[in-house]
Length: 315
Figure 1 (tube, helix red, strand yellow):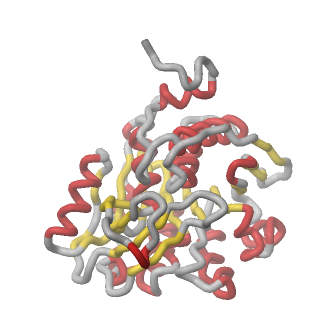
Figure 2 (cartoon, rainbow, N blue to C red; figure 1 turned 90 degrees about the vertical axis):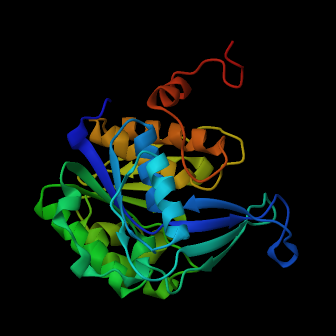
Figure 3 (cartoon, rainbow, N blue to C red; figure 1 turned 135 degrees about the vertical axis):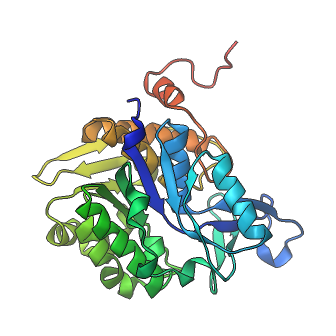
């Protein structure tokens, strides 16, 4: 599954300053915060790069130390940074990461950001040079008319250049009302060759029949958390994959690791069944790691899939 340099993936989305509370603390009584650089589409690019596939990330960052900090993080991931410098601020969110039965809680502070100044006139077709695929998520479409217009223009340009388009619905209820989901995501769904959607979000787009009505030709991947995933082929037929059992501190970012793993395998020639299996192992490995980004090689993913002494130290 070794990637050719011409088989890069471009992702488009916002980078965030993620401020995490210590375990079991709540925002109302916080006393300390940990800072990380996050963002769904950046997480996908990081996963692809860790697996050995060239990846690039298009976005906007503000001038000054916070923009420099985010850019340095992108470079440290070995992801090609195609971000534009724009006025505004770096988006922020606060995270309480709890365990059942207490739900985790996110608080977004994403108004007035550099990313929100982007629009379709910022499109540079050269971003797609050497790319086999483009990956966009519904988060970017939810952040305002400018980013939405640029995301859709980028998807149209990718199709014009023969670049495959991947779209993750990735609905965020704190960013977009459910009533607006169909109008906001519909055009992106129509452009996609590959669609990721969580089972909990299917109803926003009319379920599988609604997605198929919007796009009869895409491969649709439905994720079901610990219960596994399934791929719905455009001509009919369903492939089902059980989840890979995993434990650890890294629940955040599992879906992005899954998407990155699926893209890597799919672009490498794997069919739906093989790509689901590989992606499930990526998500499991992400669970074992703190932070938002997958840090595991392709060889480590294959080691999970091939079995062995799980949990035993290598000596």
